[in-house]
Length: 498
Image 1 (cartoon, rainbow, N blue to C red):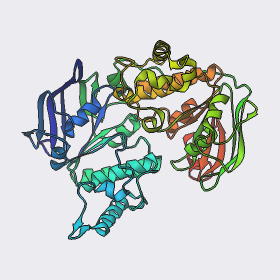
Image 2: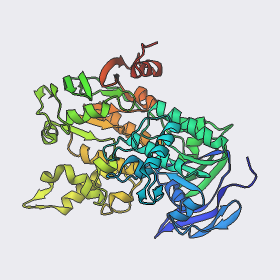
Image 3: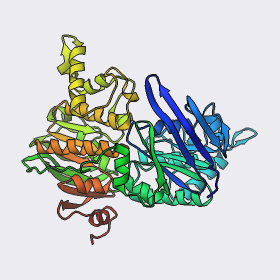
């Protein structure tokens, strides 16, 4: 590694009104090194990334490029300096093609217009480096979150960046896709790039990174080599305390069948899916990205129409393709993509929490603001929500607190069946423990929980039973005692269990 960092921050601070988001933080990114940035949601990581990428200008301190002070007036300056960022949430133009998104603002041109052939070939080459098959001509609209992330990664790689900042790039990727990304990251590091890696998955930090910088409440806690640290050491630095068990699973007794799915089929998506979830138990639906897990949940909740089969809630048939009927029957769905499908980002915290229960908040022809605020305040306390004012737009909250608002919105309806799709995607380890505690308490109180998760430790730590899908079919059902990473992965990849 070179002695002089490629890019560094020296005593950088940034405030938004009275909130000091970053306080005198120093960070050094060196060529040939993958550097982790760790901390809870709200610790200042995203603000630091936006300073590195030119979105925000620091109030004090310096940005140094090859040891020389620089000022980024905007993202274009940072990109020109060789800084590329893959953000946690995809930022694609949905009505443009994949290749147009990758080369936006840098399209190869011919005398009479865009050179689409060259653009298509370059996009295909980038996807080849990533080891994925994605049509450069297809529109971005309708892509899964995993595919959207891959487009973002290809966009960053196309810039030949010297510094690659990866903000939760693996949050929506399967194990195989994560391994592929790590291979690409290793190649970039060997070629001399400096990588900044942000992830709430501690195992990824220890697998990929050589150094870790930890933030807490906007301030630098420590910056050390990974060698010699343990996950417990890192958690203590992040949360400032000993963390209780990450998977606080309470004992509960399974009751009557709450949700029964019989031979559910949607042509070309999933086939002949049958399972039951009982009151008081947590059932995990596991499998690789693209196996059909989320699609089954959407069909059960009535977002998508199924072609054959049926769904019963507490013994009563559920009308297909009707979310209204599902809600009336006692179902609730926390979707995978909280920003696009779970929240109205410009509305207030209290309004988002109240959206699923407007009839209960109505006083005559109008919604009662005091009732709406009281409902939101009650759930904010129950879920330990961190916020300034309930009237603030939900987009000012950290990812973990946004997830809590989605949970509050549905729990306020007192559902008998709760479907949660990737409940801890992109949230920090402390908030993960809180979400797991909440799911465990709900199951202990008699709620039937169907949990879709790509994180095997979460599946094994929280589920009473594990259902595994492979290519649109349910291929295995494992009790808690017999479930293991090897058995789940064997079923998810279509192999025999060891």
